[in-house]
Amino acid sequence: MKTFFWGLLISCMALEAFGQAAHLQKSSKIDSIIKPKELIELSDDEFREYQRWVAIGLGGLPHTLEGYRSLQKFNKQLRNPLDLKHINSNIQLVGDIKVLAELPIRAGERPQIAPFAIPHRQLDQHNLPTIREKQKNILLEISKTNASSVMIKKSYFERHNDAFFVADTTTCNKGLILYSKGEIGHLHPSDGSMHFILSPSDAKEVIEKRWGELHGLAGQAINDKDTLANTLTMVYSPKTEEDLKIIAKIAEAAIKFANHN
Image (cartoon, rainbow, N blue to C red; front, side, top):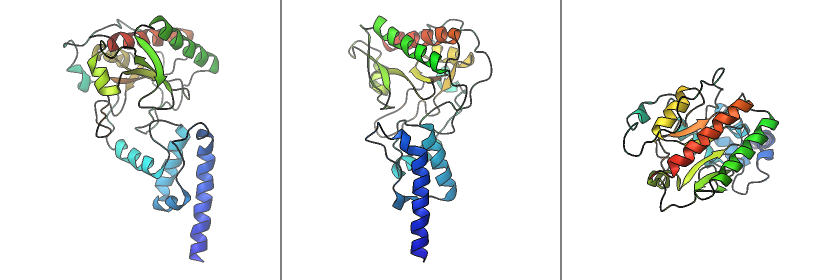
């Protein structure tokens, strides 16, 4: 009877998880939900957290038991994304540049951010489809305008999304190669937010003017070969035409920093 009970419970939990996650798996061969036989390893609270995590969408971790356990470890390393002490010491030192001068203060409150290290996403204040489409087109046009210094390929960290990369790794900012294998930044199609590696001065400007925040793991090792740049910055989803002009400036600033040598 006990065996039947656990079999029924695991089946129900698997179906519930599948309902949360199946639509996210159609285009991904490397992600899968936790296998039914593994669900018994999760406590009730862990299973509910797992469901909330899967509902955020795809990111740099697979939706497997191993991926979830990695998430739990990373969540313990999260720092205050508005704390600038880790980048202030690099401002005005060799390698720092300031491209963004006197950005306007972003209107309204900061968006609510999901309580997960990976993926780093907004939970509210998403832009409308019309703005999202313009946002994509603006970023595409920026890549074309900077074709000699930028190319597009799949994100090194996100894996599922297209990203800006430096076109010539021999002449670019060497720190970018060290921290991101040449990736400059990317758009998150699910919420309209973006990640860019900015100069310390520009990251400070973006954060203080409420246009973004640091990644919670910025400046920290995430495995034995990768450390996130300490200025890896989320730029919030643009909601208006004026916001689009600002995120275009931020993207251009990231490209200039990436190619600053």
